[in-house]
Image (cartoon, rainbow, N blue to C red):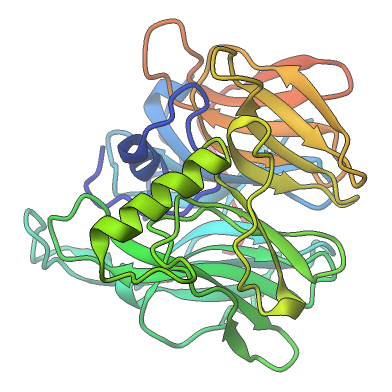
Length: 376
């Protein structure tokens, strides 16, 4: 697997609550590859950053060929016809982590400039993504009218539209030194007003890692998955032993829940964890009706389940097969739950799967050999 993985996703493994493993799964490839390469199953590819189109009929994800781990693109798969298409970025950029607007007319994504290699082990004659100068970008659904929404330094990832289509949430952190176990840390949520172009920081907690944030309908509240914050009100963040003890107590109080909800109108500065009555809740995603989906253990001895909390707070759940969910998303109509699973041991599912919540049926998505270019 490439050493230039980019943390950019909205999931963590279900059966394993591991801080190190969480870091490794929150990664996404960059680049592009030969679109007409042959492959009959998922073993020839890697996938990341999954989402749905607003009609709930197509999947959007990054796909990378194993033989060319630095060559990946944003792809769209029609769930009915299985037709596969992709966006081609300019020669000096890499694109990833795409998310469609509720209208289906626009796509927000991350665009990283390509620069000569400078990190240990990189070829100085090759171009690599400069993640510290990546920007949040937007384009029309046909790949035209590309423009940058941000113009600042910092490790940016995981953009997501509000349900009104007027705002974009994203996560930004600070690049770490070369050789660190993660590319970046100290993450917080930011919001872009698409009409004015203004960008504002919503949280100030310096989470070591965060997943893709998701607005609830109304554009005033959003949920994220994140580890314990690096800043806790009333705690001196420079006193590391005291901070760690506060984090430990915080995790214990909420049964290691990694689901947070923030209210934008309140400045999003209250640390409010959800689903502390369960164990290790994580990976929240939201449908158009405001229902919240996440996975958690009913108790410390139970297997992980997929849960849905409706707008009144009522919980329902589904049994999950033996898998390690790395990237998850729910369709806007609330009917389908998509997951990219990477087997950590024998007997676990490996690949892309779509779960129909109305029929309790799973579909494995097989890889296709060819993809059609969207933006020639």
